[in-house]
Length: 147
Image (cartoon, rainbow, N blue to C red):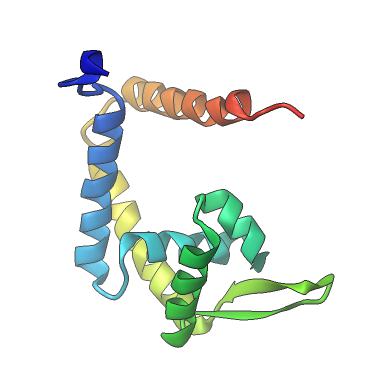
């Protein structure tokens, strides 16, 4: 383990730092929701209604933690849970009109951030960035255990 002492990922630490900058920017601009809640609401609005199990898989959040997050968002009137008509043992999660309005404001701010970034990089640099992201996303499939 000593060989890892002082190690600083030149790649992952930069991705994490960039994500935190964007998250803080959205949190400061919107002010009503933190980054994990905003991300979850945005996902549910785009792909929902979806099951709690799907959210657990997509976000990698443990059951109790996700339940607490959903409880908070539901209490604030930003999302709703209802029985899944296709599987009465599970719930479907959907965004309320209030949550939809919040997600729209988050989206507007994200577009502003992206516009600023796009204005400072070339099309070639942007395409290279997207290629790196694509490669990272494909890693998930290659690291899944085989049955």
